[in-house]
Amino acid sequence: MNIVSIVFGQIVMMFCMMAVGAAAYKAGLITERGSTDLSNITLYLVIPFVVLTSFQIEFDADIFHGILVTFVLGIAAHAAAIVLSYLLIRGKDNDRTVLERFSIVYPNCGFMGIPLAQAVLGPKGVIYITAFIAAQNLFIWSHGAASMQGTFNLGSVKELFKAPVMIATFAGLFCYLLQIQFPVLVYNPLKAIADMNTPLAMIISGTAIAQTNLLKTLTRPRIYVMTALRLLLVPMVMFLILLFVPVSKDLKILSLLASSASTAAITTMFAVKFEKDVGYAAELFAVSTIAAVATLPFMISLGEKFFS
Image (tube, rainbow, N blue to C red; front, side):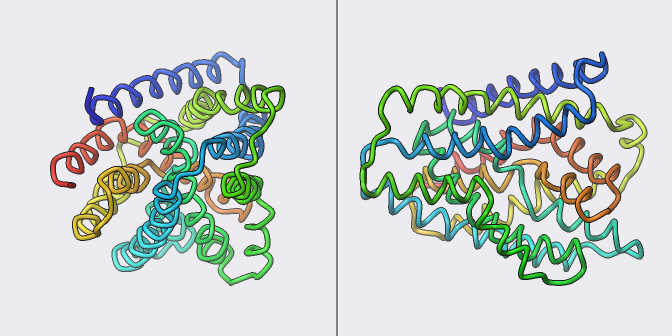
């Protein structure tokens, strides 16, 4: 089975899980507060365990090199997206303009990227995308936070190093380099919690979609423009960059996959944190998440065909 088939199958499965989440919200089984709590559990507990356990493999110089390369590619991807966002997105409503720029710069690497990377490349795929996420976090808590609050705050950068996923990244990398292996009695429960990542993340995404007036949202032309920028233009620019980067095909596919994910879930969380238009943030997230079912396999098929 080729990578495109794997990605498409994984996305269909994830979409079905999102439908379950949406149905659960509509039925009252999950409340808005419950969705927030599940999101916090996933962000601050489950994903860090995914990252930590992914490093529990034998040391391989090629994998370590891949980690460094993917981190640099993550820096390049986000820098290019930031430039594009300022060149292409204009508007009189500053709050909405900030949300739109944020939504096209930051892909959903954690919720959507990790399950797909794991499906395509296995444990090393999680390690590589963790390096991409580390690069993303550097931008989120510097450029992202500064753009949302309208000013740069050193405190936001300090929050980066307190983030559980970053602590897990450093701890996992430390264990990987020194080859510290967890006892089975420790590893197994951590891995069991980590395995909840995909269903939890997709159920949460489904509840976010259910909280929007999707039919009304789909009548607004601008939402399609923002979705196209996030899912097609930004990934296409990354695709062109990767054509000329002398790295392995696996790393190119992984970086393209990460860049092609839908709008990051943290867009909505930051909208709440910095008192922006939460409803609009949720709409950007919802539409891009649904559209990614079609665009992600398309972008990966381009990578499969042209990367070497």
